[in-house]
Length: 277
Image (cartoon, rainbow, N blue to C red; front, side, top):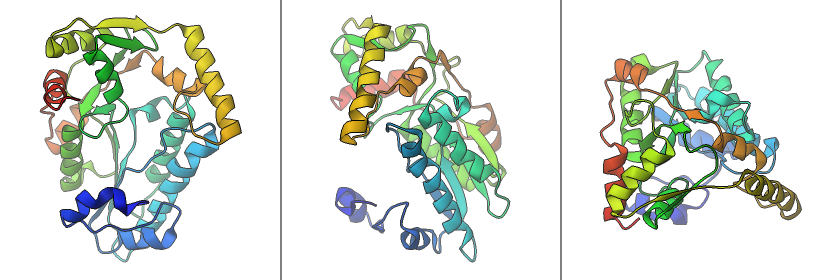
């Protein structure tokens, strides 16, 4: 934990907190000592250059790999990657996630699993939650095509899938995708329809003008290089958002581990509604 103070709820549950970061070799060795598995879920999701993403998603992953390999009995390493890695040319983030994967794929001294989740939502979410919050108020801003399709997964199902992969030896040395089981994923109209049913109000799709988003993204990038603050919306991120097909299936992971999702978007939105977002 870079800031143990933010994880007191875990400490209260009996979890041992290890202060440090991916740049701290001693901390990583402490983290990986005497354990059967390491789940590497740390990642940079915003930045203003390829180097900013690579520092965490590539170099940080390399540091974790080295720490695992240094153990007398190396633990299994599960890398929580991203579906974006399947389209590495689209953005700095996607390129860095794929580069992180490739480092692990080349390893033959340790056992590993790579998971590529699609968009994740649920308690604690900071990426998809704002989208659903706006839907609850009757509007859904769309950066790309309304017909673009994406898979989703609830965080609870993702955690269960991680556990299933750790338990099943056949998952080792595999790159696995997963989703909530909805064939062909969702387009924006389908997501809005489910939101309308959940909140009993009409949800209007608002397709944001391309020129406006381009201008904002370019402005964010220029400002970031002056202030040093890492922006979320940049020209490469826009290419991700405008990609028309982020759909995957569960065929391989279900066949190998027996895992299957339990929370579709309808149930997930009802959960968010009951928790008042």
